[in-house]
Image (cartoon, rainbow, N blue to C red; front, side, top):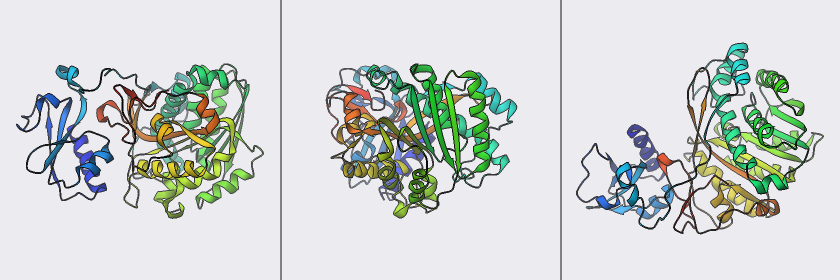
Length: 428
């Protein structure tokens, strides 16, 4: 955990061009805290001290945390889980410290686990550098991707949509029996299978489902088709599955390809970890991929449709973290497209029209399979729909401090966060 925090601090200092600053990390009950750290403020497992920092306000806005003054131009804040012996001092102005967190841990269904690892011979073999661009994957590469990254996308999608589908207001409004899904850059289809599993579990009114899946890797689409065919044996929903084997030279190509489809609107539009590939490969116009994708595809949402954009949390070639690019560009897109709004995260839904922060958001998901127990993925995502539909789902009031990262790295929305309660910013 300490090594992870060290890496996190170095990324922050690099992003803010504060690499000349030095730092120390102290662990509660392990290290001796400096005398100038106010022990009555120690609320978490770790204290991070930054020396010679000249802009603590900017740093505070970036990480979304309260920063305290130490001595000799040193500042500090806290990271990690709440220390067990000081829960009662978690925050002087917080009355309710128990947070109802979004579901973030799941397991592959038995049929899917068996198909992937027994029948298709997938392998668990993480390789971030090899799989940061997936258009040219070989058949062997696709099996490694299937065993490693497909389960992560499945878990992310299943947990996210399970949260939404369990919302009573959503269920009362979304009562169609026929549903259409568009997945852009689908790969082997983890995002779609996660969505379909959640639909089958929670949306009993749906009887027919049409899928359009677009990807440039033919081998990945063949694997995806085999998974869908197997799913039909365990699913009481009639599924029409269509694949489009097309590559994107730029984000504008997406619009051209989608425009040729017989469906003009979709109930769900998904894009998981695809736009970052365009950015890494230099195909996003001025690295504006999220803005362009959103402005082109949101008009293709049905009146009660939802668009889920999900991506990695690494750094782009231009030096900014992907979540910062995503949040900044989506806020601008939704200011320009006034008829659409964010559903999740909740603080973005409240403040996106006035928020100009370079906000780093991140959510952890865990998935277990026969080959790996609780494999972790770290992602950022946004759920968007028509403004009138989003407004009808009635989020909480503004008198809440919305948490935008997990319990091991809490940061609060710094745009307008206030009030005396914490709330997971991703849980409806």
